[in-house]
Amino acid sequence: MKIAALKEQILLKKSFLCVGLDIDLDKVPEHIKTTADPLFEFSKAIIDATAAFAVAYKPNIAFFETYGPDGMTSLKRVMDYLNENHPEIFTIADAKRGDIGNTATRYAKAYYETYNFDSITVAPYMGKDSVEPFLSFDEKYAIVLALTSNAGSSDFQTQEIGGQMLYEKVIQTSTQWEGSERLMYVVGATKASALKNIRTLIPNSFLLIPGVGAQGGSLTEVAENGLSDDVGLLVNSSRGIIYSSQGKDFAAAATIAAQDLQTQMQAILENKGFI
Amino acid sequence: MKIAALKEQILLKKSFLCVGLDIDLDKVPEHIKTTADPLFEFSKAIIDATAAFAVAYKPNIAFFETYGPDGMTSLKRVMDYLNENHPEIFTIADAKRGDIGNTATRYAKAYYETYNFDSITVAPYMGKDSVEPFLSFDEKYAIVLALTSNAGSSDFQTQEIGGQMLYEKVIQTSTQWEGSERLMYVVGATKASALKNIRTLIPNSFLLIPGVGAQGGSLTEVAENGLSDDVGLLVNSSRGIIYSSQGKDFAAAATIAAQDLQTQMQAILENKGFI
Image (cartoon, rainbow over all chains, first blue to last red; front, side, top):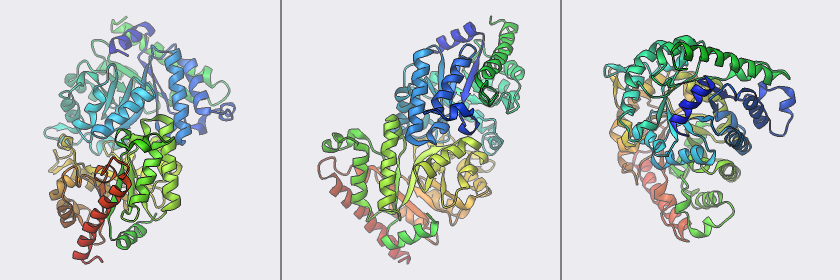
């Protein structure tokens, strides 16, 4: 989908919420666990329960891949369901792939075409020729890991490299790559203070922000520092929504949790004059 | 498998050859392309043709993943075939995964357990908590990207970070991680000169070396700089072996190409007094 359409959805739904489908079968309610395809059934129920409040979904590929070919069949069913019923919703393959040339193109085709995602998360360690192959597909986007919200981000990402931090170098370098208009970036919400700085490097790019809620990030701080002139944020919540209840009422609880975040986002968008 | 068993195989077969299964169906002979499962049939034929000369196989996961669930079924068949017929051979999932905590554990389980590989390649950008989850499985190994052979490796890997290059920092830092005895490293053969330096940081770790042959690396130079006291090298060749011929004689041609590399490796091992 085009970026313009994503922006339109954000203003229409008054939300920049992305729901992360990190589906841990150990945490799924019993009556779902016993279905033939619990990964799909749980995803479908969460999508039905939250689609009114979300502009994006982010299946975490590892949670499907771990079940082998059957898990990938479930992923395909989830994506078919999303694309058929909610073609207006932006989809993110949280796959963090990263390889070069022909191999990268195969990963891009897997997620952009075979599974029909709008975007995929990619790792930048191998440099330009590992990311550019993801940037040559029309209306498809690569979301590069810049500054992540985990403890290990201090091992390399925030180390100084030529007068700037590695993640800043990654961002700055990547803006020179062919097709960089199709780049977005992952920035952990636990580093909201870094967002202001990141916005000086990439004032207009979309940022995918995990780590709000369970991981300790503040939505207000993220918005304060991360909003671009045309919003430019997708804030992800996974556990806080999908495991809001582990009982029979899990879908209703997910609705409430998603609506709660949407309401906060609406207030921010109104406050900043977007709507 | 245990590292000791891998070393034993190297001395027994007089070879440290890894055959890369980067299976591009456009390059597969016509009579294979028309079978029900060309990814499996081609892999099986290559394995049968080269197993006498190789100690490791490295399926490139992207080339399976791009075909969706069916591609992963082919991968499972390849791994079942390898593990049933050649349990002595070391297997590497060239997946370059990298994510944190629970997600990393899912990737580890996917490749170590579901597909039953001995090892997986992983990307270090997210730091300690993205690699350690791969290091807690008995007799399973994580092969961290250190210095790769592509042009983009100069974007970040060879940039200076606190008086050393980023790849050196990655190697040095990773040796402190829990389970680091289960770490191996990817080092591109086009950087043979860097190998001597890398051996000062990790004198005993196994190194996976892609880039010999087609990508321009020299086997002699790699051996000269990269051999450890107990060999410690796996040198990968993909295209040079598997597409040695694209005709009906592709398997025979693969045998000859693999044997040629094995013969060179044997000479090196003899010359260095390993056998």
